[in-house]
Image: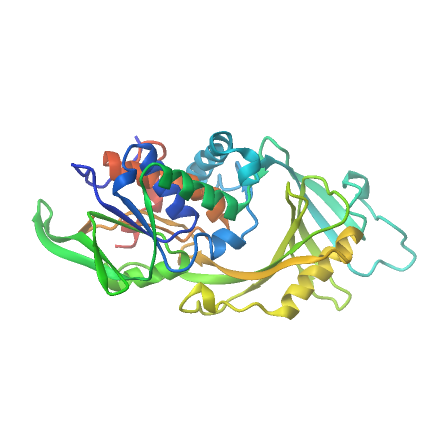
Length: 386
């Protein structure tokens, strides 16, 4: 039986979703689909999808998480992405099935080598660099892609069309009220503090990516820290079409450095390339996330070494974001024990876009129906840290 329960709310709850990324957007979408849109407010400090939900690659995999506690949620969410593409429009959200390859390459070919090396025959023609080996990782039935920013915006627009409200502001805390319950004395959510004012609320969903760490001070000291890992990416615009082959690479530079950039051609003809992970403190706001030109240049150079069509391709964007992390590497999804009406949806690391729709759906079920019925998310519950 699915688990991850919270108490149901009647009449229709006033829900404030803190964060306008993929998790918050999907939660609003599925609440609105249940007729609860008029009671839903999404609060976003800057713009929807301004952080990782707008700067991630959008790669989706059916079964790559099967060996982890996230496996059932990932499978659910993979299917939901296809459903959302049908409902919202595949072209509108940049969704399609893709081929996925593991590629090992070098910037400087061994002496005497010409053209492609071993395994090159399995590669699409546009990957014409020095490849030492290639293996298949997925096909259009098991791997896909979506444009994260486009999907996030489409989800919010659909929720707004059903009565939800998007409000720009900075979430500063929660208003809680003490209450007595069957389990003893606890607290419940009565409002969300935004820019010095209080929005009345029965439910607060904390879905602020790495900035969800602030909720520990608002809710419970036993909650784990939510940190972040910084990634850089560039978006290139090659002059010739590239096929839908996603590349996960192991690449050795001429200087002997081994890097692992990921290359994602998109349906609009652009190519997204990311890499250069950094363990750095998360700044106070996304607007303070800096882009290091040298790291972007490194990513671009590797992409150009793998594919000559990317070498001189114009750069449409240089960007950086922080992926939210928990101490055990497992997301926080579900109610916070002892605080009725408080739910978390964060810590998905590099799989936030994949698991966004599934997380939004189960959170909406918890709010609207009292429990998650689509998927067993007990292993993701914040209560595991108590």
